[in-house]
Length: 52
Image (cartoon, rainbow, N blue to C red; front, side):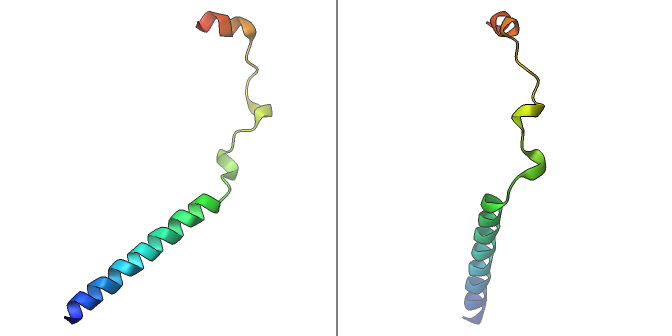
C-alpha cells in the first residue's frame, strides 16, 4: 500500500508543477518576441489589390 501512496504523492506533485508552469507562462511578458507596429513594413494599397 505504501507504493500506492507514494505514486499518489508523485502524481499530485507533477500536477502542481505543471499547473505552476502553465501559470508562469501565462503571466510572463513575451518581451523579445513581441511585434511592435513601428517595426513592421508599411503595407502598400497597391500590394493589397495585387494579392486579391
